[in-house]
Length: 292
Image 1 (tube, rainbow, N blue to C red):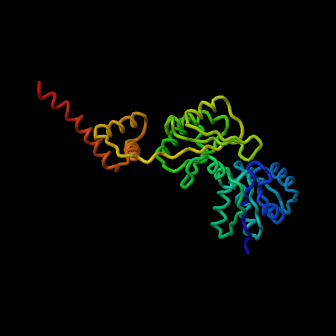
Image 2: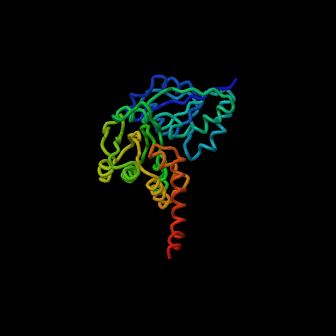
Image 3: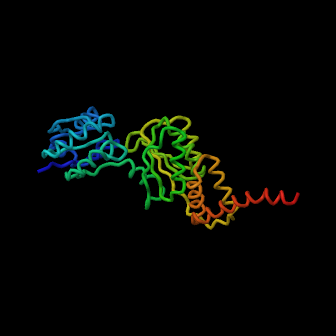
């Protein structure tokens, strides 16, 4: 009989938020895979429990190498508990590889629900919560970050991001550039901790605030794009918008799709406008020569 993989949520700040079942699982597990064994030790001390099984490290640097070892333990009947530094495993944290490998082997996977920075930030943001998507950490390089943000520019669901404090100002400035300076957002800092702070406002205003320096764990919640109204732009204007995006480095296919989405019209309409503009440009010089 195979074992069970247990994914356990851990406090994102206040240790009193630890789910009651976490203490029981720490005692019952044959193997505890922890992102940081020192943080695990502090957590077990706070919960006043003694781990009942073997403790191993499981973090980004050894995740690939350690996954087969943990799967073998599971296949042999072990109960393996996976915990990260804060929140739910697999959500921008180690865990996905192990879950996927366990599922592939037909091993049972369950969870101890617990704190989540994503849901906590979303709940306190004051922004729509009926539909949202989690985008994780934006790319570190400026060009890649802008590209990723442009992909989400037309997303109508509320967006949730994680970010490092030293990159926050640059990321908010990039968001203001791509999403619009007036797009509403909330920066949630040190959630559930002593110095918790939720700063709400337009992206441009938040970027200026962050430029002064911000510390702590950061979650950003951004309002989704507005529902498009009727766009009265004619073919020439649609073609011009595509040309602007192409000049900025976008491929024509992606530029057409982005313009169509922003205008709330079918891609075929924009494609036809681009073709018409191209034909008009090609015909212009020949007509001019004929008059000389």
